[in-house]
Length: 317
Image 1 (cartoon, helix red, strand yellow):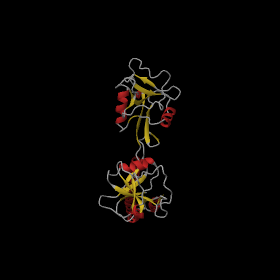
Image 2 (tube, one colour):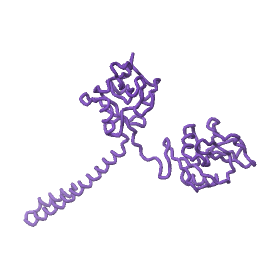
Image 3 (cartoon, one colour):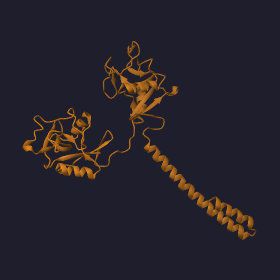
Image 4 (cartoon, helix red, strand yellow):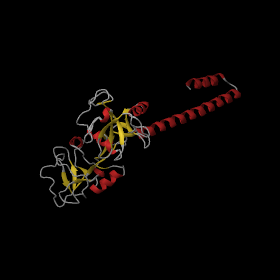
């Protein structure tokens, strides 16, 4: 664009006739139109970028991200609110007063403040029975009450959190205080449609009617860049079981086809006995042909079965 402008000025410097200046004017108009179009394109790109930046941010502007949650610390003296109004203010952001889940979170919060802040803890329903606003009871091992607190002085039913040395205190819910809001962070979609996300892993539960042999099920999973389910811990095992119907049987990636009685996952790691959930009397290798494992939903357990039998299946990636 600078080259075009220089040419125009050179043209004007070398021109003396009315026609020459008229031509220069047309060139300037052309430049002006192109510059306007360029500015419009830049504006659209910047607006699109800014819009996506907002969408992709895990927390709203002014909030802090800690683990998988966003926190807003209202520390403005003139914006202090009663416990009830603080809740309303948080809820406008699709959040609520903070519910503290463990000691680590509590210590982080206490290290982030220097003044008393409302938290989502109250005993207004029943004196002395402190509960979080989500209905869960207070774990006193995780609490950090100040000395001789809570004391319910003249009916104090709402809790504030102070910096660590001062501890927590019960206060009148109508008193104006700073407050802390909490909401889940926005996370991008982890799994493709048809798959279920759990702790940043994706699971595919075969649809009703889609029943395969153990080998065919593994082929299906591999085509999806996955593999038959390998269970890593008890929480995962219980979650998977909760996703299945009470009488539904699904193949998982566990077999002893290479060494009878030596159960291994398809990545060759051995089964942790603490993770096993065999039905009573199983595995029994009935007919000396049962070398693959199916798991039952609900309260059911595991069973060894002939790998050629067709069952539902679970993929994981």
